[in-house]
Image (cartoon, rainbow, N blue to C red; front, side, top):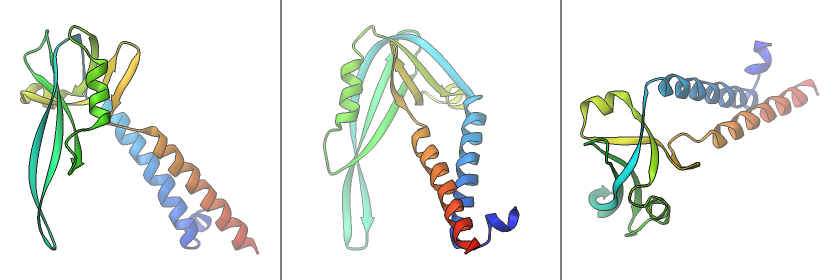
Length: 163
């Protein structure tokens, strides 16, 4: 069995995709056990822009990072998510979230427990407003595609190895 998993480059790539994807899922399960869940109504939702200077081979550039901040009535902390938008000044994704969360909207936030205890600004891992999930930092879609691709590579490798 192990000979099939590492017989050639194709089977090694397939094995790597499967093992890597499964380890990401296990890491996410481990990390989700350390999340703090907050329920409350939003007090203030706004976007702030930050310009970050960056260097590359031919000079310097200014990149924009947009931070979406959420303040709850029940907490004195600010909760944020961000998107690197490059040279753009706005983000349709963050604007959509702001439009779906009006003042006094009941929301549910998942945040890292250590960050919640130690910092005033806490990164949002998952955000739900009503029954709609507006933000989730972990996307299973790509993980499932990688596992399927890994199995396809293993099947191709076994088929051509038998010839």
